[in-house]
Image (cartoon, rainbow, N blue to C red; front, side):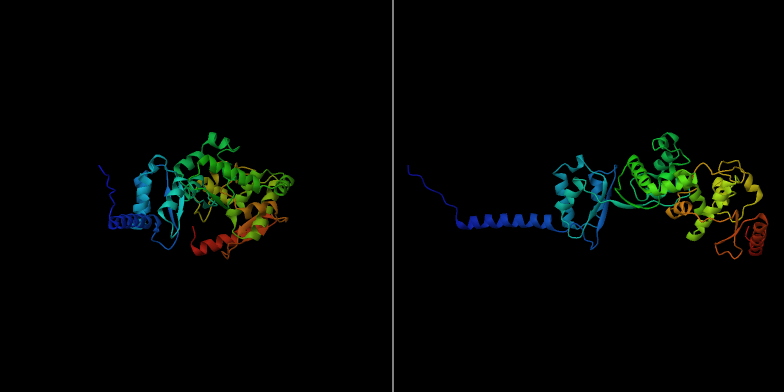
Length: 344
């Protein structure tokens, strides 16, 4: 029997081609359309508790309908849920679902600018750090007050704050606490250059002791020039084996940083930070010392001053004195000014 070659009418071929082209166009539309509807970069923060649905939920507030549909489709068909990478991810205007997926699935996150603050307590430091990192503030605070943890970084609970040099660092949002501390140790060691160490050695102080004195100087004034003078004054007292009698250390001992006046009853607190009762430096900084404070100690102004008192004009500056008589006169003027203003 003779075979007959069956041929599809051209109309069917055209229809199939058109259908295929339509499918390609639709797929292309979804894959190429911008994921974000914003005209500014958006950030997605993915932590250890996230699953695929919570990742979707974090993107939805700024995502376009077509972009979100494409991202969901890709994520669900590539087992993204099995290996969700933590981090802070930047999504630019115009980024399509494919590029965003590759970024998230590949862990190609963008670092944050972490500014280490001049915090007065480790609890406060922990709270401020946790606002910029995935780390929990309670976990940070507990670690920084744990002697075993601090020993890993050749510090104790009184000196662990010395590792934190106030500056801005580029660091990943999902860094671990150990990685953070290793980074702080590295930055600390880089800050303490040979020149700075030589100056500390010449003064008979360790870097930790310099930072401890700097923390007190920082609390005494915000004026850079006065920091150098106050540093020299306290070094004079140390050289003469006189107690520092630094008011900020009393506030730290009581954890009452808002005190305006220090009465005699407050000076009797039994604390190693009471520099009215104890000679020498306290066991560690009373805050995270500033770079200006540290350099003020290392480059202190040489004077014969042994005493200082806040000026009675409340300018924030100090009246300095070399003798007890001069100091008492300055102190009386200041106390009178406090009384006249009703400051207690």
